[in-house]
Image (cartoon, rainbow, N blue to C red; front, side):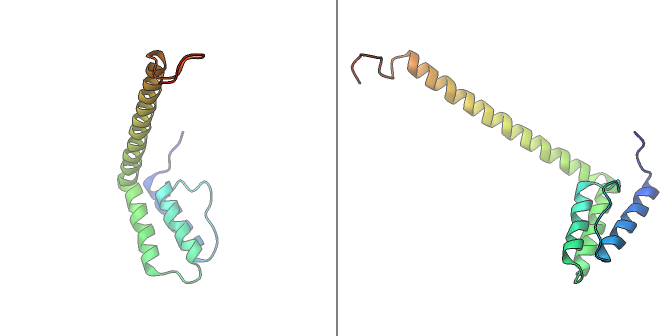
Length: 116
């Protein structure tokens, strides 16, 4: 896979920024990361009344793509999500084992037997 150079990314960012500032959308193959694209879409949604703060936000997001901050944040977010899924699965497993143990230890009525 051939990744764009920094100069190519800068050119792409400026083209996409000009596009959304003119009321058009984004190209799907810009090479820009999700955070940068999301910031550019905010500009597109605000068109024609685009506050400078949105343009600055897009520039900060793009700077984060170039320096690796966006990728680090994404990786950390994915790791937190994965850890949460593992915790939830472990809790589910504990609940299943507890219910299974309760059934085998007589905590549930047996067919034809007395209720406790």
